[in-house]
Image (cartoon, rainbow, N blue to C red; front, side, top):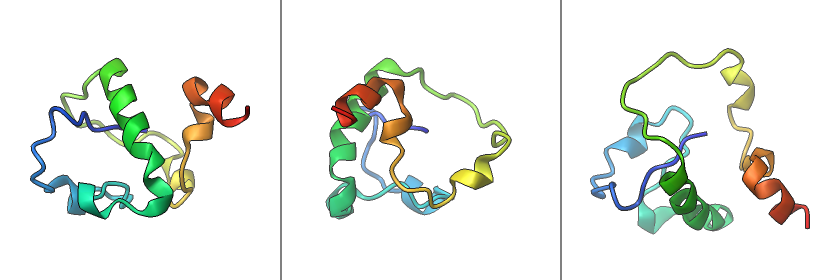
Amino acid sequence: MLVIHPEDCIDCAICVPECPENAIFDAAEVPENEQESIGRNAELADRWPSILKRSPAMNGHEAWHNAGPRWNLLEDYKERINA
């Protein structure tokens, strides 16, 4: 899972069509079922390291295509979601 740091983003939207999973939205077009992702994205962007170079997709990445929200798989959020 990747996140975009909201303070580093310049709102050019060039990443929207480039995302192979269609997981990036223009801020004004975030679907209702993904609204909670905005705050989580910002929180994680402050804690996770920046990716500075492109690397190949991880083995098994195809299994995650169209899998929907994955917040429940992150250790940081399991306790909050399952409470």
